Length: 535
Image (cartoon, rainbow, N blue to C red; front, side, top):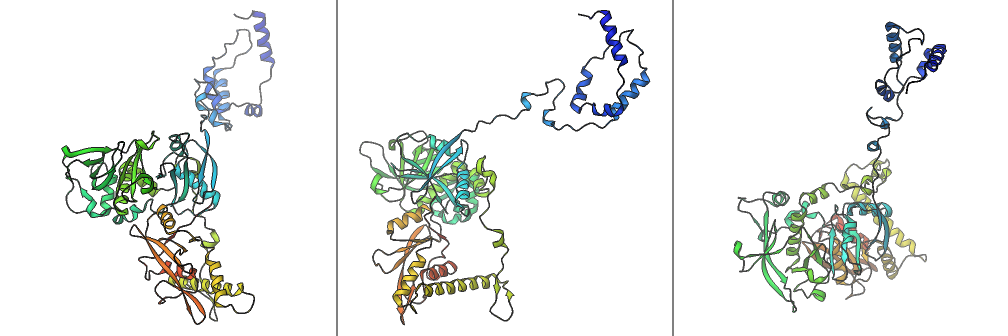
């Protein structure tokens, strides 16, 4: 409704009497950019004929130019700016609330110590490993792995770096005593580095589309491609379902669509092939119990377990004749199931969806250590040792000399006797992570198998047959070998040897460090030691 005429006249009179704002006050009252954009939407006020003198077009234009020439005040809240056709605080411009529910998981180590972690629901296996590496100040050499352990049925598998840990746990039954284990596995991506050890020629054949002879690197590329594929074939023992379960040796073929077996010898004709298992809705596990629980023909069993199933009845169990055959089958199945994602995990170990992956944790090495150089102070003038081989040999010699002095300092009554020197040597090597006191041969093989059958994985243990000797257990060629370390006494001094006294060492530490640098009588150098870490 329109206002009465006297009220409009009084309003116009007050507007005429109000003094015009100065330039400084105009500057203070200048609108912010987002308000300036909204100004044209406000209809211009129509003055009353008796409201007083009107400004001419030129003066109005000059006044508008004066206001526009004033520098605009920067908006401190640009995120609140929006279109003039919407409200100032639009709901679409506000940050979306992310519902990342947190859950508590429990992770175990090989010495049965555990640690509870509160993680988001989308945390990956790599994120959990990074978090444990950070909390325990471990060195990240890209071999730390999270395992799913099914204790009731004696199965275990690698949880791939990209898998969601909460999703893995959601498939567990309430009464199942399953665990997550955190430990090293040097063989997790070893097939990308040395494929020749994982794909023997008698188990690999090419498809009809491929012609010619290709190397092992090309075989990996074929696994990762979607057009061609290598065919893995060979004999496996399969467990038949029924009341009286028995094992039958069949000829199997691995193809991109799944695993098949032949009903007629080693025939590959389509009419003789029968489907055994596919990989998209099932996971592959390694059998740890072996003959004791499953009654397998050998200790090289593996199986397929559906994701949503819980009991042992749903397992599709297989058994190979040797470790090389089992490793070839399991590696090929991993490549066919995960494809390029597995290669991305190998190339980008810190890639993840969130959580700890954004930390980009590098190996725990101090800056001061990277800036050190090797020096030689034996002469009249000191010098920098630039040759890496010479620097390494000098470091080894200084370490051995330091340990000899430490052994002498352990005895406070004059020069040590032979028995006292042996006691002090034992006290030194027992503190090493690679030494395992009083474990059996089977336990040593289990530790090496869990941390990966990579050439050079080793540990040192006490001998069960001879209490005065030690045993070096190591992996080479997908096999575990044992070498006896024999004590040797000469001129009242005690030495240790692996080659009947041809090469002698004053203590076990010196022996291990020598074979880490030299192959000697061993099939390869010692590279990775097995250790039981505590969380």
